Length: 234
Image 1 (cartoon, helix red, strand yellow):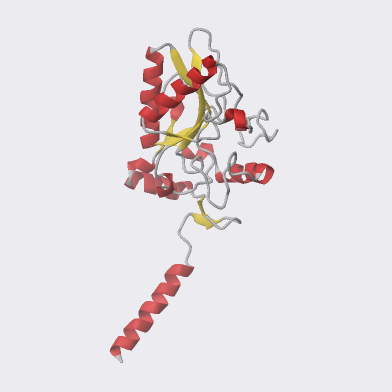
Image 2: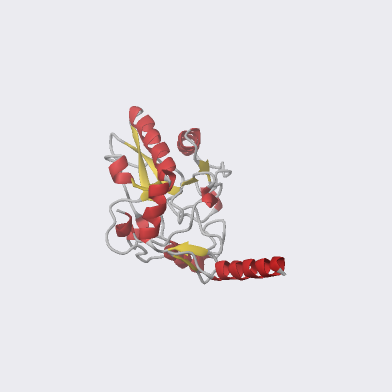
């Protein structure tokens, strides 16, 4: 009888645990848990610094930004980020690697230029509902590396004149020409893409094969999807 009572109590506890949402987390319409509570994020970051979202403008002084989704100059034609964010964020391990990459390029007369890094989940939903093609937009049912603070869209500029190196297409070009496997390009473009890929992958990032500008940090699924505004990450 005692064992039966214990098993019954444990069953009740399990049901209660499974039916209680995690504090600071909600389930999206696409069925994935999403963190919206900045306070909860800060608690986790204090416990594990790898979860810290690093302000890239402060971590890498002078890093140029062209945050397309903070403007209407992007494929959606809409401003997806409220306010006027002048910087973006990455988790600490990825931010440290990016600082090394920038230092390496600066020695050669170049610089990174960031189009996007951390992306709140709500923006990913807007993009997906326009594109619905996993080659070019993250499926909200999975979330993206951007939502986890572990993916970045970027290019290289020449420090002498501030111009972007020719990569063959612009940012957010949803054609085969933007794929790494597409080689029917001028040699200069191939070399420029190679330079970006080599410096990123040497420092731990991985390339997305369908977008020459997109790189992500491995093991991003070990981090939660977030929908926290830029201002609340300061």
